[in-house]
Image (tube, rainbow, N blue to C red; front, side):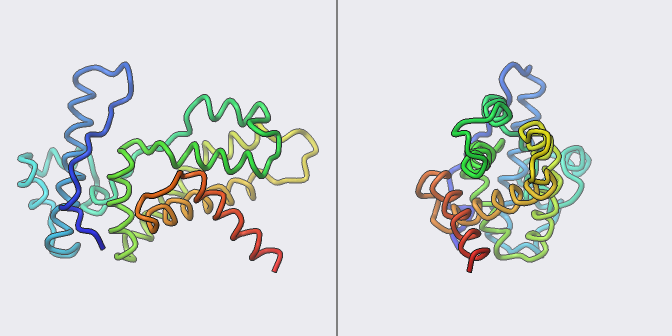
Length: 210
């Protein structure tokens, strides 16, 4: 496992058009996440406390709890993770290829390729997740919570009388997104996300047709 402390700090970009107050909040949130990564890499998950994270950043526990409910939440750094509007619009309109299977892959790519806290920070999170079952369970539960936006897009895409159930396709999307993230991380962040998403779908097809 690569130590999180060895990675340079990556500044997460605040959404365009936000004011100074929101940018400051984004900077503080990411500082808490980065501090938790450094401390867990150095001392282990169980040894790190909220107080240690706060001391690293120079904030009070009260401030910490304005951003995260628990230490694990800071380590995972979860934020709402939306599909880019242009990707969503293209999918709903029947694109980009017109083949549902291939367009589902593109939707996964659109979701995975632009994490709100930056790709390197997500990689550090995944490294920790794969070594701590408690974090993995928490991460999977969070991924499941993100499915509402995906189900809405799937429902808008499917024509009346479609043989496909939106709930089934949405669950498949969540699984593919998570598997793509893990596959990308296992490759050290090399390769385009689309390559990994396509490989995940191919693996699923091979299993189902075996």
